Image (cartoon, rainbow, N blue to C red; front, top):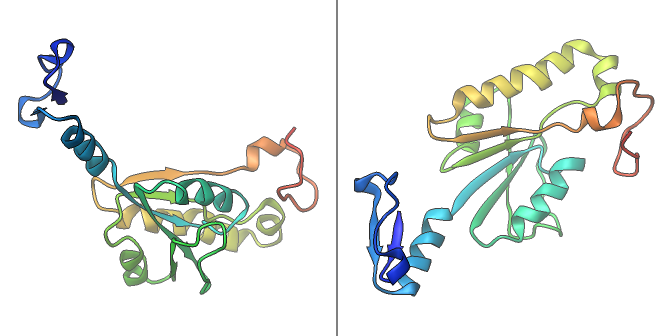
Length: 170
């Protein structure tokens, strides 16, 4: 708990662990610690894709988030996230995955083949959609937060053709 010297905040919440309780006399110092503790280092494998690009743009606007966009191909920082670090990752190589995860607090995993690509090559779909995801999860440190996102269900169960940002959800 981060309390401050005010009549209505005299005591910590009773559920706060005592060792994690900090009492401040100045608003600035409490605000500083809130900000400091909120900092995150986020890596987004697939952060250049349809969903990833939009989410990365939002995260890049938050000064408390350091953003690393990872791709299987060498890329420059995009115009919509100019301060983002970019990383070329080889999902077949555990050292490359570990390097991608160095210093990371959060993983937002967006790597996946779309429906038509998966139907065209089911073995590659298994490798990319399942094996690569598993490798990243297994390489994460115990306290790393892992988020897996997919857009497929918003388009319904009978997908036809290419799905992109202009496709209306059903």
